[in-house]
Image (cartoon, rainbow, N blue to C red):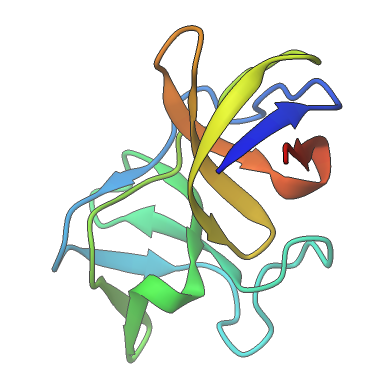
Length: 120
């Protein structure tokens, strides 16, 4: 599915958390509440076990175990910096965000759905 960017997006996280399947993470958000940011429901703020990186992870890909989580699929929190008018190809929608490919640069990452309009 193709979309056009209707609002510029700039990431606030230039060093995104990247996780592998079966990796253990520290849960820093209350999983019953989701993220503390009410705009992004079902995202949990997590940290790598060595403390090297932190970021938001979809609640759906974390199996909770005590105060930790086990990642059930590979995941990257990479967000794309993208400008109005750019055409993108949607790959996966999750919790109000779209994992997509910039058709001009072939870069892949997340952009909020509210900044996109589906092309017919």
